[in-house]
Length: 81
Image (cartoon, rainbow, N blue to C red; front, top):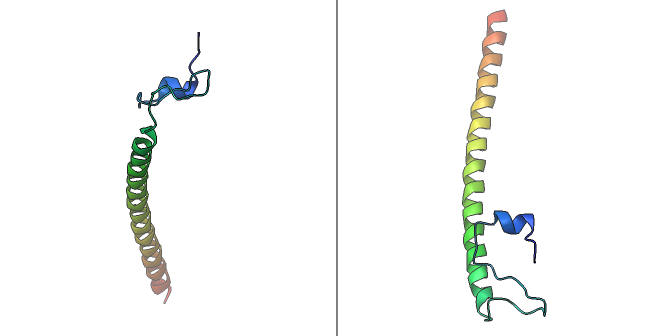
């Protein structure tokens, strides 16, 4: 009886091929690597989009925060004069 690893138990993609004891792929064909590559490229595209979106949000928030600090600084220094 083969015990699945933690990653196998929580993997949402159940189409992955397991390796048998003789080292051959369990899927029976050699065309699986193309599908895997396509899925990886699609996943990387989604990751790039999410990272880009997150970076834009951070950049905007930082810009607004620095503008706020600059505004507060100019208000406090102008009151002293």
